[in-house]
Structures are given as C-alpha cells and as structure tokens.
Length: 340
Image (tube, rainbow, N blue to C red; front, side, top):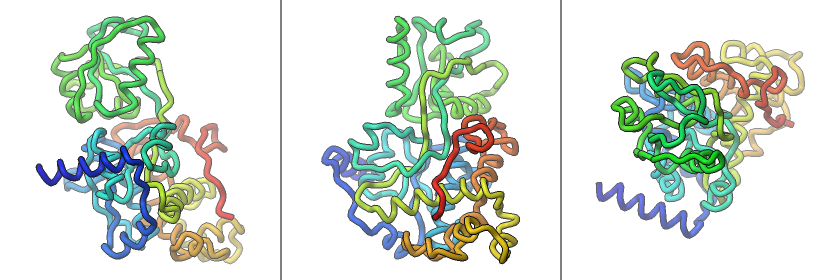
C-alpha cells in the first residue's frame, strides 16, 4: 500500500511539474525484455482478463502490437491495471511505458500533463444507461437525476456541461472503477449511469439482467480514445504511433494475419505493400526497429479490422458496429498516414 502511494505521489509531482521523459524508452524496453502497459481495471472489449487470466481487448491488443514491433514477440507485454485517477501519474512516473486505457484525447491532457497522444484507436461518445422501469426515453428527461460516474474522467466534465447547457440539475455519485459504477447503478444508488457508449455496452452486459436497462439515444460528447506516451521521447512516440498506423494501413490494403506471408513473398506486390512489410524503403530503421516491424505486428496480432471484430465487434459479446470506426474508404473516419 505504501509502495503504491509513494508511486502515486511521485507521479503526481511529475505531472504538476510537467516533467518530460528523457529519451530512451525503447532501450529500457529492450533491456528488460517486455513492454509495461497501463490498462483499465477491467473493461470487457478493451482490457479485461479472460477465464485464463489473460488480458484481452482492443486496448490490450495494441499493447501486444507494440511488443511485436519492438521485441518481435507479442506476448512480451505486462499489464498494469490502473484506475482513471491513477493512470496519468503511473505514466508520468515511468511505472508504465505506455498507457492504453480507453483514455480520451483532450487539449489539456495533450498539452498540460507532459504527455503525447499517439493516435486514436476508438472513436466514441458519452451516453446514458437507464433502467427501463424509469420510463425515460431521452436525456432531456433527466433533470434532478442521481448519476453514477467514474471519478477522474472527462465524463464528469461532459456531464456537468450537458446538464448546465440544458438548464438541468443532477447529483453525482462517484466511484473509482467502472465495475463500482455498475454495482452502484444495479443496487439503485443512482438513477442513471453515464460513460462512453462502448463502456456502457460492456457494463450493461455485466448486469444480472441486461434487458432491464437501455442506452439512451443521445451522444453528448466526442471521445477520441487512444494510446498515450510521455513527452520528450520522440522515438518511442513514433513507434507507438506507427504501430497503430500500420494496423490501419494493413486493413486498408487487405493484409491480414492469415495472408501476410503471401503478400510479403509476392514479387509483384504493390509498392505500398512492399514498404509496409519491409521489402523496400528501410522504414523500420527510421524508428529504430527492424524492417519487418509491421510484418510482425500483422502476423502476430492482426490488422485493425481483425482486432476490432474479435474484441468489440461481430465476434465479441459486445457486437459493436464499426460505425465511425470504419475505414474512411467505407464510410467511417478511420484514416492512417501512408508508409512512404
């Protein structure tokens, strides 16, 4: 307990002082032989242990993709379960190499905490979960409601903005973890539960009777969620950023974990495919990695679409539609710069 408290104090000091990272995260990761990745305390679809205790989800798999790119082995990652209040201090203090914990990219976080967002791996928006027995059909009917909410999140700020803008009042019931908000909601300690809509879908499934609650139609915010690193280490920032970009580009090019070998060995592959898979251009060296860095990501973890489908999409319990998170060429806004 004292050890964790000490880490938290040190981390908060780093944040308040806007301490930036000294270059060398790549070297540190290679020396210890694994990537230490900060994730949630348990959010199905994004980062939650399976029945064997292995961390699974969209966020967890991006951590594995970074390990595959850097160490050549997607299994060489260790996970730190962090609450929303702990996450930035843990990253700033060096307790984790990378934070990928359904974290919203905002101006304050990007400019005021000594941190860098390396991209967006899920575009989301905040919504409301209510019990059907209340008979509420719209968020505009929530004046005077008590609201279960996770502390230390943008959710708190968005909630206040929305209610104030609509001339309504609410009572906040705050908890440290998403599981606690669900328990509070289920026990009747609040009228509604608010969070990112993807998180609401996961929390609803965790209710004893999921059909007893419904997500209201309103989306009250923009929540671009993505991986975060410390400022001051451009090489590590580039590695994490281009790991995500490689997975998105691979999906756009039709390269999957099942056919990546065929593409890599195709002498007639397009120049873009050859650059991505390390057959020409020497792009791995530009970020301090082998030229097969992207090949290893795709082979061991998959492209973005594969990961989405198995963690939060059609092959997962959540069964979330791609929606905004579809490729730009298919009606979504998912777009990655080219390897060129």
